[in-house]
Length: 255
Image 1 (tube, helix red, strand yellow):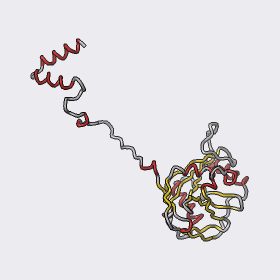
Image 2 (cartoon, helix red, strand yellow; image 1 turned 90 degrees about the vertical axis):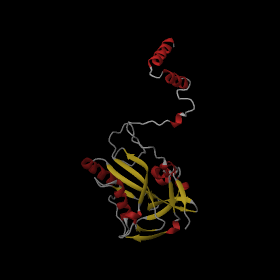
Image 3 (tube, helix red, strand yellow; image 1 turned 60 degrees about the horizontal axis):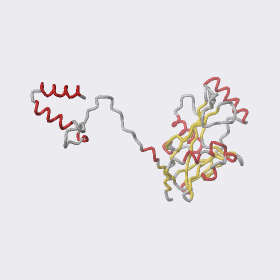
Image 4 (cartoon, helix red, strand yellow; image 1 turned 135 degrees about the horizontal axis):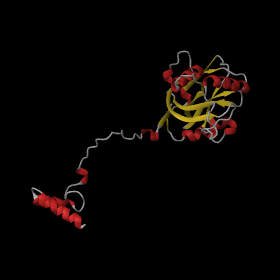
């Protein structure tokens, strides 16, 4: 402290205006700011890189839901499956993996509401099998473009514009570690080369639309409360949708 006092006295002595300098020091010794001057009034120049401010607009996403009665459903020619059995499906996956690597698949979550309850549109095959509309991507195909193509092929008419399908957000990623049915919402620690990635997207429907359903499918609207914790009836992927969708705010539009 003594050394600091000596240095300050030396500065005052050597200053061209010792009285003014001494007054300024007395004003700043208590708080570091001149008396009667707010620290908030001082501006600083940052010559470093300028980073954009954070955007929190996605923290509370609002999704418009329209009544099921707003939509019209028709039929079109049946769409044959690529594989005639589960065994054939995984054999084809194995052969394609050897040539092109991991398969990439996309699936669409299409939402409507009935009595202000969210419903998911599912394709039903037979009496007990349900799946989301979706399919496999080409080797270099973009995920969003591929999903729009698949939706138009599956549920659209010949003149259905791809603009009808507005891809809003990613819902989840599921991974298939091996050439067999189990999929997980993570890559198991012992797996270094998963065989398939399935990405789920939330697709915003327009207020009115026409769905052309292949004759070998049924398009059903399943309420979220029916899917919740019901992996026995719908499988773990579809049964997890209520949890994955709970982060959105739903706006229930009238007819």
